[in-house]
Length: 286
Image (cartoon, rainbow, N blue to C red; front, side):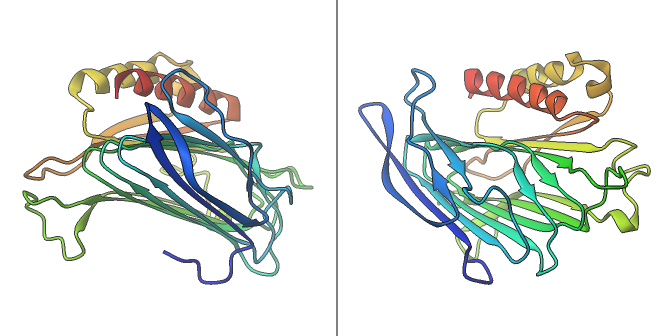
């Protein structure tokens, strides 16, 4: 998958594993994307990278491409150094494309800081995950409105985010897979303030939105119940505006299950606390 125009920033990562520790077998960056020196935050051998944008923000006409490939048995956590700010985009919307490939037994977490949409900003993000049926992925997003002169929470022009999780077909797959994979789950978010976002079914009077999706082959009923308990045990303001759903498709030969959590709130920290608790339970369980 390639962006429609030459990217303002490019990041390529290829992650492999040796002696129980993951490492970068390939790394390339150009333009306004960089990564800090990798490190290990725990004893599991999971490799952690922090992505940064020296430009400090996304501007009109910017486009960014992240290509991540995790080899069999390797694991990666990907963070950002700070919030992603999208300023006014009179030159045209800013875009980010992320292409992820996960081999058998691979694991990846994408846990960026919040995305802040400022007055007059337009941003589109498209993520596609191509995963083996026995791979695991966790991806989270928090959307925050930026400051505007009139004090409005929704002064940006447009935000569109899409995530598609594609699963490789194996020899026992009973899906019609023309390209060797099928769509396991799709998540879409579209916010256009001029069309109204505060009403029922959209932001419900809240200003911040969070979503977390996990696809893994071993999300059983017991784990789902534990995750649901985490959601319900949060502060009433958060638990009352959070929903958790288990989804997926039945495929002969097996396929990952999907858990999606969506939250509305008034503060970034409330959503971040929920995501941290859920990710902690997933790390212990899958």
